[in-house]
Image (cartoon, rainbow, N blue to C red; front, side, top):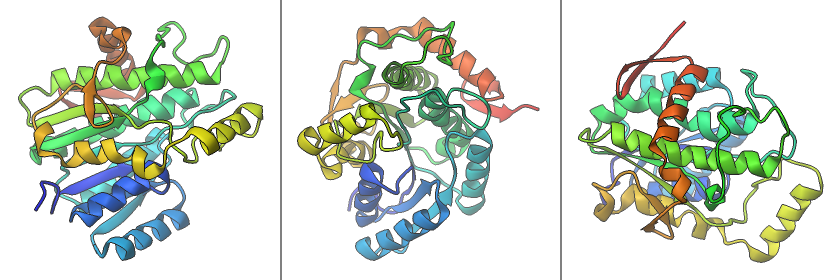
Length: 294
């Protein structure tokens, strides 16, 4: 019997790629798995397929566009109505946009989805995670963070948009969030770690229709690893007994490794935290407890 058996797991964007593989493998191990998707029909079909594949009837689904803060609030409210516990949260949402787009709240889409989506989802679920401790938060980041720096004067990438730079900055933001949250959660029984899944043959960048997107598809065809391979570190962090007390680390191939030197800048992480609170309309009550304002 593994640690994950009987535990409740929430995985964002788990209808394709490494998210779906992670959901499948955790359900096989006896977890109660809740997947989040944007398309109601597709998400329901995937949940049903996972129940059949794993012979685990405890696979559920919720609908949310994770670039939308209003949708995240609704998704979290629906989760808390159905479930009293949450033992593992896997923030798996993320996308690459070659052209600058805006979220429903008018924020730059890459920053809104890849960073603020993780931030808001996690903070709204912190109370139930703490009440369910020991619990784990897993943030899917990327090696793309290496070499990136946040321009706090232009987090929305308004001046001159570059899709890869925006994506790399959002993955650095994932690490700032992971490390700052780990410091704030010390002694709570809730751990938080980040990971790089590898260059995976998935639908990443397929939302774009230009030469850069076609280049990604070509690279995926010849050089990418399978979703099964890419999901291994997420599965490891959700299930392994040896990482039960490990927090604030960055994992590649199921091993903790150093992230970029810039990612350990505490002042930058704290500044991003404060800006993110404001952009999400959250008021801080205690270091790890939050309520919505307005």
